[in-house]
Length: 340
Image (cartoon, rainbow, N blue to C red; front, side, top):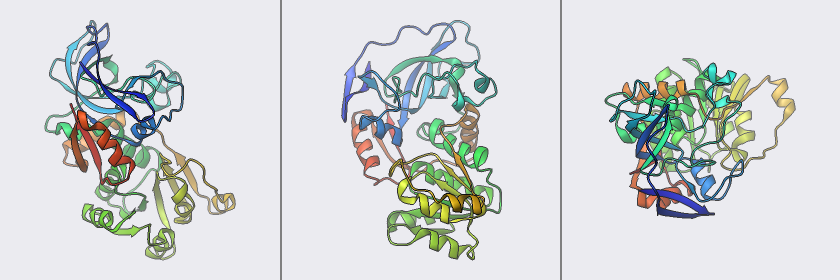
């Protein structure tokens, strides 16, 4: 079968590899239908990793799959069922896992596609407990964006920032995969959305997506504009995932007691922070990594209700590297999906 594997820094190859054995007890065998690209794929492509990994490694951290067969003791799943697999290999028995806080698993062995073989292959075996059912009516390409993209936004906005109707939120890089979902989620809740983007074309698209105000952060001072739009009060919440280049401005954009939630650092991992401003203005900063399986299910439920992801490009597996290059160069508005 085919497997897209990383052999070294930026060395992606479409390899022929053996098919997996029949699924073992508690496992299902999956056929990958589509993979959605994320910055974690770009990091892996560049040779970055948070822990040791063995190369070659199969890429793809977010996917939608179809059940092919089930192993002994598996109930509730049948061949043909579509699933959004949870990409972190959690233990399932620590306190965090038992309480449904999967992304805080104390014994996690890694993230698929980054530390462990991922989904960009024709078939794989996986623990049945790590699958979330895709509702009827949800398009396959859309469902590919559930297990990281939609779930990350769900976890950021509602588990961490506790976003409420009527609040004002500043969404950084609104043209990204999670940025576009955040705009839709916040507007659906009844919030005032101030979005930022790096060029006029993306600003126009963010406005068409429903943002109330859009700031081109390449040509405008976004914290100044954000404070002017809020009568110098500042925003209730900042949705941050850009990192060093926007960090200080994001904090300046907050009102007294405002909340900043961050899940990324694509422009750099280190940034200076004015600690006096943090404690004097009583700002709250939430780090948010990954999501729970509940977040994945909630995102899929919203897709079933009509809130679909913005798809920038859909390409076949053979053009996976083109998708990564487009994502890395920031030419993308929304998600890039790779079909198998």
